[in-house]
Image (cartoon, one colour):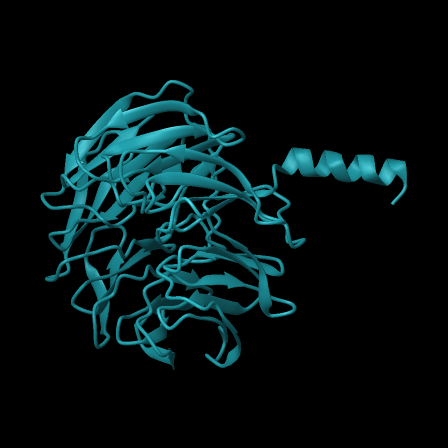
Amino acid sequence: MNRHTIQRYALIVAMTSVVLPIGGQTLRPASEHEWRQFRGSAHLTGLSATTPPATLTLLWTYDAGEVIDSSAAIANGVVYVGGGDGDLVALDLDSGALRWSYSTANLIGESSPAVGPDTVYIGDLGGFVHAVNTADGQGRWTFQTNSEIKSSPVLVNDLVLIGSYDGHLYALDARTGEERWKVLTMGQVHATPAVQDGLAFIAGCDAQFRAIRVTDGNEMYQIDAGAYTGASPIVTGDRAYFGTFNFEVLALDLKDRTVAWRYTRDDAQFPYYSSAALDGDRIILGGRDKRVHAIDAATGAPVWTFATRARVDSSPVVAGGRVYIGSGDGRLYVLDAASGKKIWEFDTGAGITASPALADGKIVIGAQDGRLYVFG
């Protein structure tokens, strides 16, 4: 490109606030006004376009009664979150007022809601997928799998994609709940699928990373990750990133179908359960070594670490140059994305395994004390 073309291209990038990650795929963060699913978008990048205040204040809390492992979704000024007691609740984002509560009749674990135009979807530990009317909390349909669900649903066109501990990734009709297809793996499907270019990608408990065609469920290829994986993958361009229980973070080359690099630390042989966020040229995620790690996305070289007081299973969200992440030590941390230096923290007094949801300048996160905390 000539100099003028380069200048025009740079201006377009700046005006549209896009992120150009490794792999060549242009990604947009989740809208500043909503966070419709786990990790914000179907690429699972953990990026938000909103900018929370530099100095945060606790705006309100909601007592869900039991531990909250589910991460919230936000759409049209409403927060949706699953409580450990099995209730999916809808709360006003500004005030915390309860709009409605829907009982799944089972416990809800880590499955986090996904919000469509008029329906919210979630899985429970009884193995059921629930579709609930966003307007009034009335059930639309349920679908039963053969084991517990900790995977979060992802909406792709008219399909709901979700994994089950029965070993299958399911594609369900979003309007009726009818099974369109299912793919059997060799282990539990714990992770949430990432979606790109008509393919769903799952990192599995069977140590295989799979690419599955969304239209018909045909498996297009596998890459051997070499280890059990509980984290959900980031997929962007020709790269995928996720941590494993073999104490590594992997970058996979989807074109060559090989491992591009492995990040490991000799001083910390602990699993990575947190799903990563992609911040430009850095991968950021929590580790069970009690640290938050930033890794060069191109090379796998360490960039910085930040030490908490307990393991970090919460998955980070990056917005406005800052990292928002919870820890088992009960604290919500805000870190500088470039340096890893702590900017702010809030102590809930109970462990945090859920991940933040960001929209309209607010941060929403649940804790093990059964409370949902909202800051702004």
